[in-house]
Length: 263
Image 1 (cartoon, one colour):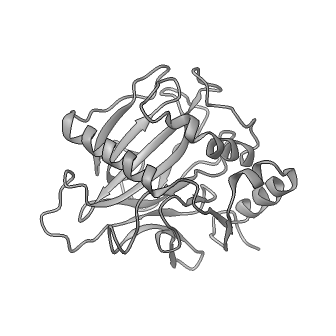
Image 2: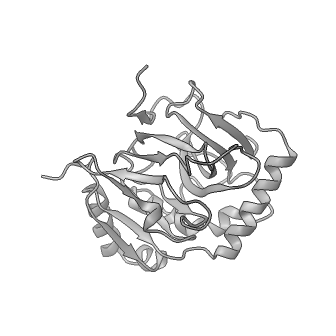
Image 3: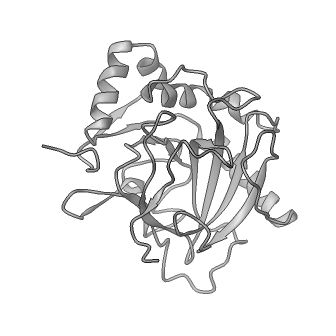
């Protein structure tokens, strides 16, 4: 019997809307993800738009100081560098840019991401538009989290994310291309025998992955042979996480579990 914590098969779709608009397809997709299958939806966003967003975020990183911001009602959009911070639930190294639906932005990001969040919610048994307003709901809020993993530095320990009332799956979009923008390492999920499936090898920029959050997954070091690695040359792996996060102080939802951390 396949357990919920094991990766099974990868299946594909060409349309978010076709899934959202068909209740039978929603229920079948829920069943498959719970059993460990992973869904990849093709070409949800254009590479032109993704390049514009990456360039915008890169300019932010060069022109403003990163800082830590608690997720609280009405908090500002922000960016921070995470470099194996012992305070993090999952040990990792990347540059994170966070956007919240109560703030407006130059790309109108949450309107562009609305269908992805709607599908995320429906697969989690929630109303389509929950967590997308200007107020939190059930102590949680939607967050668009852009991650930059620099060549020679970027990685994330293997971990499990919580499956709770707010989520079954945490959609992840690849924003640039393995084999062109970076060449080794990248996002993976683990099978029951310990082998890794590198999703970056299966995805193009603009594709979105829907994976059971309990399946062990992480990011292997991006281009480990890189000389003089740094955060500011914009060389590395870019992704988007369509998250629903608990507010600071919410004790009703569990935390991610780092499967490699020893302390």
